[in-house]
Structure formats: C-alpha cells, structure tokens
Length: 496
Image (cartoon, rainbow, N blue to C red):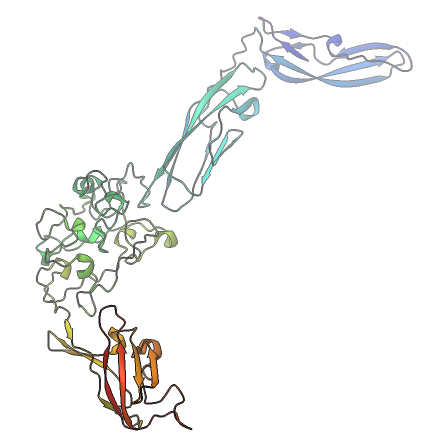
C-alpha cells in the first residue's frame, strides 16, 4: 500500500490496511497485529511491514507487505533534485575513431543512483548510448559536430521531485594530431606558418585554397602542389640570403597553442615572414616557379638524376591521407603509420638538389648551371640497297635505321619501329610474287631484335626444300601507317 505523511510528518496504518483476508482452517483467529503502525520522514520510500496472526489454539502465521511512504504534506527536508547540463568534448585525428565516456550524474545534486530514475527525453543521436546516467559515444567515421540530447531524473518515491538537463557532445577535428583542436590551434597543419598568415596569403581569397586541391592552405602541407612541403618552402637558408638556415620542427609545443616550439617566439623559437626568393610578391610556399627562371619547382626540386630538366617523380593526383601532399611525394602516410608530432609536415623526400654547389638549391637558383637535355634532330629512314643473310654478324637482315644528331654534338641511332611502330613491309620477286610480308616491321619491342626483320627467307613456300630465297634483286613497299607519310618503294639486292 502507499501512504502519505500529514503536515505533522506522520502516517499510520492498521491491521485492516494490511490484512488481505486472513483465515484459519481449524477454528477462529484470536489475535492479529503488525510490526509497524506509525511512519515518519525517516520512512519515506518502501518499508517492509509484517502481519502476524494467532488462532485460539496458539498457532501462529506471518506475511509481509510493502508499505510505500510518500512525503505528502510533510516537509521532510529532502533536497530538490538538480540535474546540471553536461558537455563532453572529444578531439579526433583524421582517419581515427573518436570515443568517449561521461558520468552524467557526476555534476548533479540532491540524489544518489539508488533513489533516482533516469529517462532520455529526446532521440539519441547515432553513436550515443546512455544507461543509468552513463554516457558512451563511439564513431568510427567522425566529422566535426555538436550533438545534443535531453534527459530527466526523478525521485523513485517522491515522483514530483524531478529535473532535466541537456547533454552536449562536441566533436572537434585536430588535423595535425598535436592534441590541440583546430579551433584552438594557431598552426593547424603543423608546417610552422601561422594559420592567420596562410589565410592572408592565400592566392584565392574566396576558397582560401591556393592550389585548388580541395584542402584549404591552413590544412595543406603543400599549398602549391609542387611536391616540396610548405615547412621547407617558407624558410630560407643563409646561402639564399636568409638570416637563418632551415629549422626542423621539434615536435614539442610547450604552451599548448599548436605552434611548434621551434618557431614559437614564446618558447624561444624563430619565425619570420615566409620567404619570397624572386621577390614577385608570392611567397615560395605558394609560388610554383620560385626563382622565376621558367622551370617549375616540381621539376627543379625533383630532378636529381640524370639532372635533365625532367622530374624524376611526377604528380599522380591522389592523396590517401588527405594532408594536401600528393602520394607520389608523400613519405609519411598517416592512415597507415599513425601520427607523430612534427613528422607529417616534413613528410616529403624532395631531392632539392644544388647542381652548381653554390649553396642555393636549384628550385631557388635562377642560375643553377644545369646542362639542358640534348635535343636530337632525326633524318629519314635509311633503307639498305643490299644485305647478305650468311650469319656472319654483318648485314644479316634487311634492317632499316634512323640516325639522329644532337644539338650538343651527340648522336643517336634508332630502328624503324622506334618511330613507326605500326609500319608494314611487303617484298616481291621479279615476277611480282609476294615472298615476304610483316606487320609492325622493325618493331623490336614487339617482335624482338631478330624476328622484327626480313632475313631473306620466303614466307610462302616458293622454294623447293628450302625457304631461303635465291640471290636476286627484290622489290619492296614500306608502309609507315602513321597517318601522314606515303609508302616508300624500292629495290634491295639479296646476296644468298
């Protein structure tokens, strides 16, 4: 049964309130009494009351009833429940799962877990579970978000003693995984350039994404897509007329502002305006031709061997870890290697060669004394007028060559198939019979260096007992099949 205390803080019950119909099979019940008749504020809640029955023969039996006492009109001095709003802030690194737990009752007042009922009043967002005041949030593919829901707490007996609170889960991205979320981090990509400077310098002030790769400059460790990371390009060297040589990040942030101690003046670091080698108004980390000598940095920074103005590594257009550095150049993939503070921002293996050894690296050196690649001019195909397939190692095949002369005194020899890989040849005897034909003639990459050429044999069984053709003069038609050249015809003497 349920009873309420009166204004004096008292409630009473009788045997009749508890007795549900006691009987005695042998006679009559002589006496019945209960273990507690009077209740006060100390008894608010559930109470176990025992009913005892004794018949006229002295036999005794008992049963137990639950008496719930409510505060009613009394002032028992119960503290009102106070549920305070909760905030759970979680920070995640790109590609990682975000998770966190929170005791929602830890900052609430006036109750314990034993005398409270917990109810969720709004739908729980994805990834959120909350049971008995314990919050758990897990998301394997997090994005920055603010998640809210509301709960209530009520006294299990005094059900009017309730309160509600709002729970807010704030999920914040930490791009450089230094433990400082982007909204508090003054150098979000850990490249040593303050975010405010990267936004001021952005070549596109609408998108703030200078290279148009979809990653804003303050999160992009290679803001001009040249394969040389911003951490290198914003700094100078003494040989390049700078005051300091290149300074590596320390991977330490003593004051927790997101700026590496190597560059943070408050931690005795060194910083200065991003370097602009050619003084064209565009800092080097945004300039695709830093020395303004007409050759892009993605070539001059990646041309170690043979140092021929052709990049040894080329942009491929993929960025698995989303840090703004193309995978062709990226040596530190955070999706597979995890995060080490200070390492991702320098994760490029650019050669940065200094060809003339003057201390100024080629990508910043307007006069780097490199020898440009030799350019070759090639003549017409040279078709022999005779050959002798006697396997002496000289002129054994009807081999067509192309000879080239370089502008630096060099020379080059090419076979027909190097320039005309779809050429076709037909060979006829003096009676006009086709004795040999070959698609892709002279294409050694396709046929090999032997089968690519005519060796003086017939493909049409025109010789008795031997497919070698007799010594004679033969007529050929050479089709270039390049869409522009007309076929060439002529005679060749076969000396068998």
